[in-house]
Image 1 (tube, rainbow over the protein chains, first blue to last red):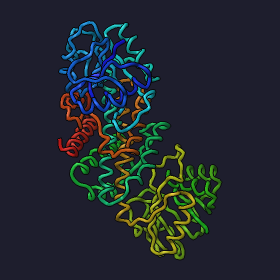
Image 2: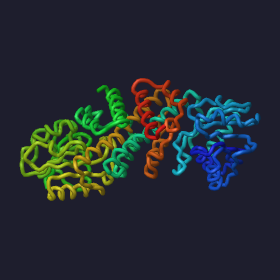
Image 3: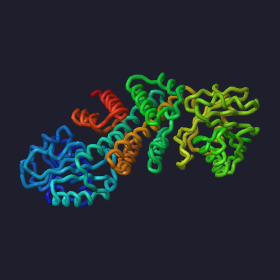
Image 4: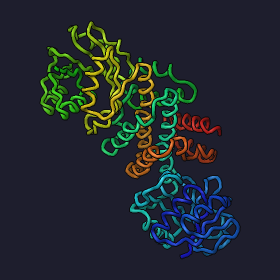
Length: 249
Length: 249
């Protein structure tokens, strides 16, 4: 099986690394960004190109959602399987006469952060049983958690992930902005943050809620609003409103 | 040293437990809620009362911020130290002729979740060096991380904690609401959530940001908005607006 990864960003890098670590050979990593491709190629010992796409049975497109459609057009081969790794796009976004599938790893990827690939849930959608078998076989070499998912369900998986990961990380950024402004080391908050997450492994997040909003403590809420401005104030008001609504306060 | 804890909620329970586990004797746990006091008393083997406050050198008030002032009035003794455990209130909220201090544990407390007390940062503010020595001595038996903090700084520590913990937990609640609506098990998201937090132990949250907003992917943002309503839609818009502002998109 000849496999090519297209892209040189966070997902491309980590998938390529997961493949290499699990002895799944990659024929090429293809993309536009020569600097990044060169780095990945050096680290993982995979051929790369910015010009000539290698012939393959499976192309894995790992580019941003807004580029998937255009990038898919460069694959002119017919007898092959092409997958994208987007949480929100349908497999039909892929434009070509090849077989189309979705191959979605539910994780947050940054090049500078190592990952435990075997815990990453993979969600797969194919046109037929043969392609399903191919992709399950590959994903199962990387991860213990491979599942089928329709596009409809996958959209909601991605949306949930945006709340549970992307927005959570942004709250950490805004939190750090507040602590930095008072020269309070952000490290102080790491035990609290760790515990916030450990808690929801054991109890429902709705039962784990603490803080001034769920206590409906108007005095503290007012005090905090006076300390905030701009986007952080907006977040503060929106989140507290939502907490009060959820607990009918 | 005679020590009394006042309150029967999450903070009262966990502080009492941390004291007992570290062989700091408690003379009494005092409060209004007999059911909860009885449970704590049974588990930790501490005398309790709802009526007669035991004579002590140190009273630790662990009640909600809005009740601290009123509760502090029941302590009529003069030659004693009274502390509250609030992140946002000044020590002067305590009404009495006794010495006043703040004793703030930076953690999220739920009775049903066990805690590693030695990692909890304690922030202490006192009227004099003697009281500082008393409270540092006690807190250091529980935790490796005991510091002084002015009220001014403590307010910002609490505010940062609201973003980094209370709001993060609420995002988990809203995320679970979305996945529940599609019968997607919330367990799928735990590796992603764990990784989101592990990441910020190694890299700045601002550098760790991923997702459609920071990629400025209008198509996905629009798609997601169509899947959401009410408070979750408001959160979605507010968070994305804030992300775009932070990255100047």
